[in-house]
Image (cartoon, rainbow, N blue to C red):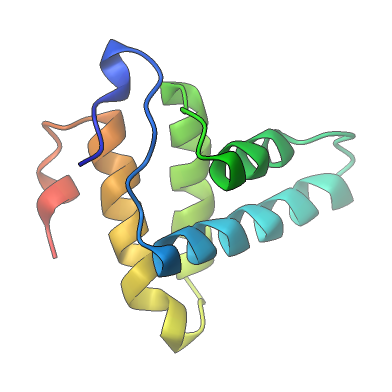
Length: 104
């Protein structure tokens, strides 16, 4: 179970599929940031943390949540269920009291 980032950096407990969708969301978001002129967008650091299973700070989780929300807006059908699972895990890590963090 993912712990709250309110108490400090936390790792995410994602399924393999959820991790892949988070990865895809960060790649898309990072590409868009690079095209907008950012030299090294935050998504690069987040991809490294995701791949290395390193802990995330609350602000990093917020950026990952934003990338997932945008990605899920037009994600391939196969990515939607694991993407929602990843989004719930990230939201729960940011704010465990958020009622949407346990919603289906």
